[in-house]
Image (cartoon, rainbow, N blue to C red):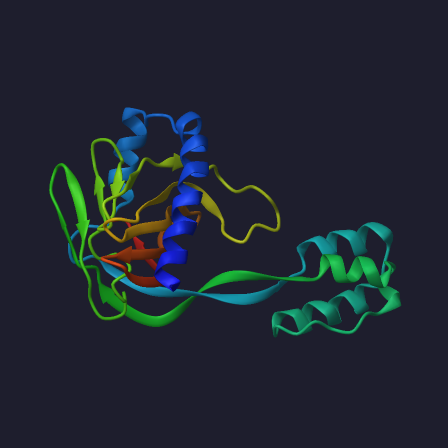
Length: 237
C-alpha cells in the first residue's frame, strides 16, 4: 500500500514538474558544460562526508539592533548563546520588540563535517561519470550517471533530467557561500514496472573552493521503496 501511494504521488508530481521544466530548462553553453565536467569528481576522489546541523543565524538581528541603537552588551550575550546553539531569553535592552527578536533569531541548517572521509566510487571517461556505491554512501548515488557532453543526469530508475544553473549566493545571511553550481530535479514513475523517483541533485562550488555534491531522493525500483540523502565535500584536482 505504501509503495502504491508513493507511485501515485510521484506520478502526480511528474505532471507538474514536466510542465514547469519544459519552459524552464535551457541547454548549457559550452563553457557551462566544461565547468560542470571540472566540478564533477574523478575516480577515487577523496571526499568528506558532510551532514546538516541546526545553527542559529544572528546576522539579521545584529544589523537590526545596531540600526536602532540597542545595547551592544545585550547583543553580545545573544551572539555568545547562539554560537552554542542556544536561543537566549529576550532582553528589552536590544531595542526591538520580543516579536521582532523571535523573527530575527531563527534556526537554519548548516553543513558540517562528520570527520569521515572516503574514496568516491565512480567510473569516468570522456562521455560520462557513473557513480557506484561504498560504505557510507548508503546506495544513494549508486547507478546515477551524468553525461559530460550534455549535462543530462540519469538514475537507475530509468528517468533523466537536465541541469539548471545555480546563481551565486550574495545574501549576507546565506547558509552556503555558493560561487556557482548546477541542480538537477528528476522525477517520474511507471506504475506497471513499479519504478519511480523524486530527487534533487546539487553540485555546488563554494567560495572556499570546496565542491559539495548533495543528492536527496525517494526511489522505487521493482516496487522496492528507499529514501536517502548523501552530502560529500571535496576539492577540485
